[in-house]
Image (cartoon, rainbow, N blue to C red; front, side):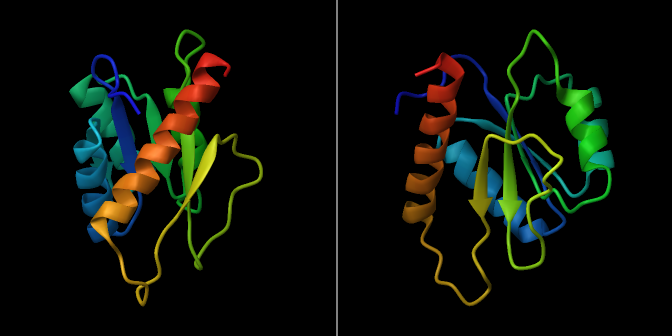
Length: 134
């Protein structure tokens, strides 16, 4: 995958601090600017204060306020991509539009940084293909 043109921002919203931090580092390694938040209200505050255009929202859809967050980020002039975080605690929110899912590893699963970087790069490539209509 070629690196993104310009500043591409990923907003990561989940209530697991360690996962948000780790996922943010991995997206940064893939060439994206990561903005972490622990809930949708915090995410709205960060986006407003930092004046960033979010290209990709990675979100735990089970968090209260997620639909409101998505609505606040959507813009007819900008193609926001939404990635839902899935795990054993929650399931996809069927009423929420999304472009892809990302399965959170269980606490017992071995996690390889290289494997996750590869997984994220594949995810990003697929998101960009849909952006270009390929």
